[in-house]
Amino acid sequence: MPSCDPGPSPACLPAKTFRSYLPRCHRTYSCVHCRAHLAKHDELISKSFQGSHGRAYLFNSVVNVGCGPAEQRLLLTGLHSVADIFCESCKTTLGWKYEQAFETSQKYKEGKYIIEMSHMVKDNGWD
Image 1 (spheres, helix red, strand yellow):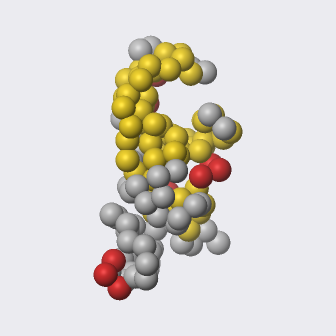
Image 2 (cartoon, one colour; image 1 turned 45 degrees about the horizontal axis):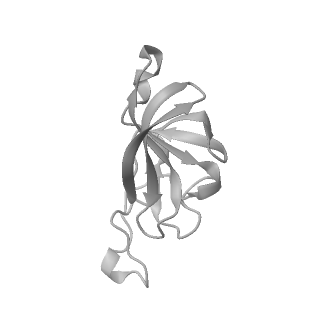
């Protein structure tokens, strides 16, 4: 079993620093535009979601992501209150956070995050 070496400290990395670095021993998803870490594979809930611009993944938690104001949107699965999320490093809009679901069957999405596949890349140990 590999040790969870977090890698070099942020002070030792060249140019960009991010708020959070995920341990190198975990398979992770990163921003395709700036390579900021976004989520561990362990936080992936579903690969069967549709974003505004194509396929998307649903995550339980994310890092290095900012959140805009919540607004109501009629999505494929009904009315939801969502807030756009963006990469804290390069400011690219990545997807959204489900703030509130108005249908009982959709309540499991509350507090979860959608990231569109076109905005992320797999890092660390995806052999």
